[in-house]
Length: 73
Image (cartoon, rainbow, N blue to C red):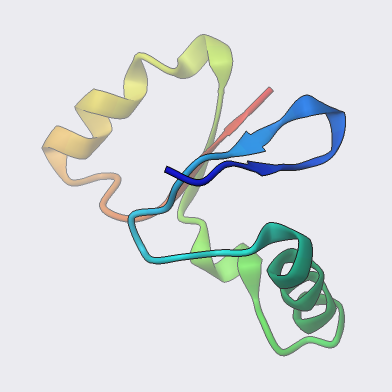
């Protein structure tokens, strides 16, 4: 397994969707976002705060949440 170290001691360990080189790829994604070519906000269907994390499984089971979601700290 390959580990990629990001800033602030965070590590990107692996991805279900394929390989990634964060030091090279993340700046490209951010530039595409800044240039309006990549709409990241449309890709996220819901945001949850930590206190509401227990609502996620129910939303998944009932079909209210079928795609990507973000946990906001």
